[in-house]
Length: 191
Length: 149
Image (cartoon, rainbow over all chains, first blue to last red; front, side, top):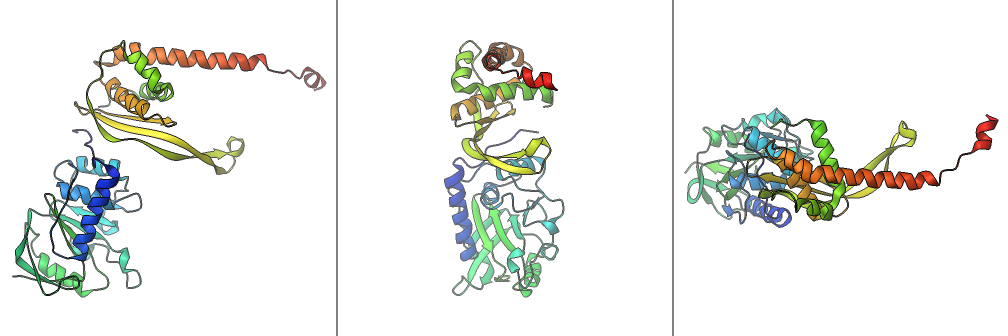
């Protein structure tokens, strides 16, 4: 055990700016947002994933994460969230390695689609202007996003996820200090 | 890092939480300088709900809120110290947290216990005994009622 690491340098303002970045990312799907002052979470968490966790997760949101004991201790100390051992019970799922299948996560119900899970997915890099073609609400014509290190078969899984709208899972992609979001209403075509 | 028993740690955390910044700083002047630390959380002030039970075994109820200051720090060797204390003493909470972390190190513990914790504990015990002595002087014995029983 390497001991705990600090969270946000300024817990109030930094959490607000991280929340703002996630809001921007969700409303402009596929656009890459840079976080201004992310924390330095324990490996294997990347700074962006740490910032998203600390900004969104709290005592009312069960979390599932596959990033090991140090990351677990860090998130529990700074966010005070309950941790569950089954991804199907979590409101937030953090995947640093191979993520659980989207179909296995909570998708909400037709009456309460907001009761679904959000997958925070760590990837290697996010680049705009090439790769996937995204269309849907929040994108005027088409937006292109290349996700380096996306899990295998993600696009097919995503099509199945989008088909059960309004139910479904939202995904936040994190790489380094960059964040991009894929709300469930987005269609992905391989470029 | 479980080289210290919970009872021992509970003891010094309680003494440090009651001591206050001025009390700790006065004792620290005679001790070795504290190791450098980074703040994990706080020091920050918040409210904690106090729960009570009527008669000690009735249904729990909310007695009221009290001001609590808490702080968590990390030393360079990875030891983490915590402090929770009543009131708004930010400096006292940080000092207590650093001392809690330093006291977990067996190499530092004897010197710090002798220079800081033991004198503070003695002073607190003396103050408590003094209050008890003053209160005892005003005690009324209801002899008549005792005799009638």
